[in-house]
Length: 403
Image (tube, rainbow, N blue to C red; front, top):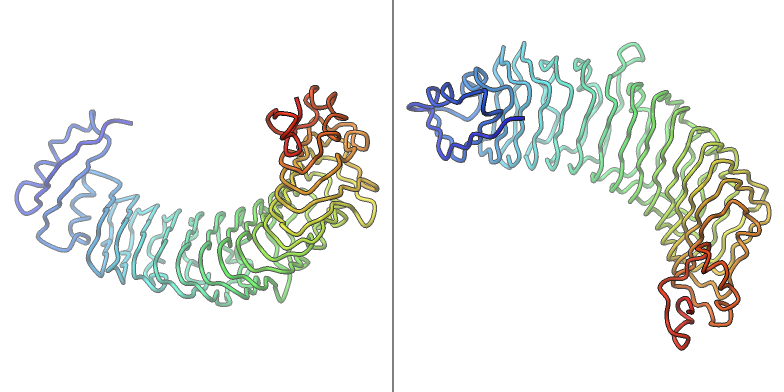
C-alpha cells in the first residue's frame, strides 16, 4: 500500500476537483480530508464526483439525516463512523458497492432500498437503533456474505417467507449485544451457507425451533454472556460445528445431545452455575480437543456419572472454581496433555498422572496445600509435571510450592 495524502481542507465549491485530480496516484493510495466543504449534502452528487478518483470513502463524522448513493455510482466501499443523525440510507440502482459500514446511527430498520445494492458483500450497521428485522430484507442481496447488526436494540427476528430455493449467501452473522430473549431459530432457516453465528451479550432465555434447521457449513456458535439455563439443540443439523461458546450463562450442567456434533473441537462452559462438573454428556465427541469450566464458583468436584471416552481431548481447565475432588473413575482421555486446576480448594493432590498417563502438566497453583503435602510431591514438581506457583519460603508454602 502507498501513503496517505492528508489535506487539511478540500473545498468542493472552488478547486476541490482540481486538487483531487492532481494527487499523484503512483505515490498515494488514499486521501484523508480533515475539513470538507460542499455546495450540497455530503452524499448524492458529491459521491458521484468523488467516485471518479477513489473507490472507497470514509466519513468520520456525518451530520445529515439522509445518506444517498445515487444510481450508477462506482464506489465499492463506504463507511460512516459517527452518524448520530442518520435516519435513512438510499441505495440507487446499478451501483457497484461491495461494503457498507455505519456506526452510531439512528437507523431503526434495514433500508428498504438495500435490494438495489446487488454487488454488496458486507453490511455493518453497528450501534444503531434497529429493533427488529426479517431475513427477507436481504432476499435480493445474493452476494451478501457478512452481516453485522451488533449493538442495536433488536428484540425480535420476524419469520421469513424465503424457501430453500431462495436461501441466502450469508456466511457470517453477528447479532451480539442486542436485546434478544426468546428466539425461534426457524427464522434463520434460509441461512444455509452460514459458517459463524454470534448471539453473545443478549438476554437469551430460550433458543428453540419449530422445525429442523440445517446449517451444513456452520463452524462456530457463540452464545456466551446470556441467561441460558438449558439448551437442547435437537432442532439443529450442523455436522461441521467445531466451536461452541456457552460461557457466562446460567447452566448447571453440560447441555445434552452434544454428540449430534461429532466434529466439535472446542467447548466453553466457564462462568456458569455448576455445583459439580459431570463429564458424561461429552461422551461421543471424538474430535473434542479443548474444554473450559473455569469460574464456576460453586463447582466442588469433577467426575463422570457414566463411562466417558474423549479420545482427542488434550487441554482442560477448571480454574477459580471451588473444586475439592477430581474423580477419574470412568474417564478415558488417552491424549490429555494439560489440566488447569489453579485457585480451587484442593487440600490434597489428586493422582492425575497415575490415572491419565499421557498428562504432561497439571496446575494446582493457588490451592490451600499444606507444606507436608507439597514436600511429598517434590519429584513431579522438579520434573515440571506439577505446577504449584512460584517458589516460596517454608513458612509461607501452604499457599504455594516449597523450595
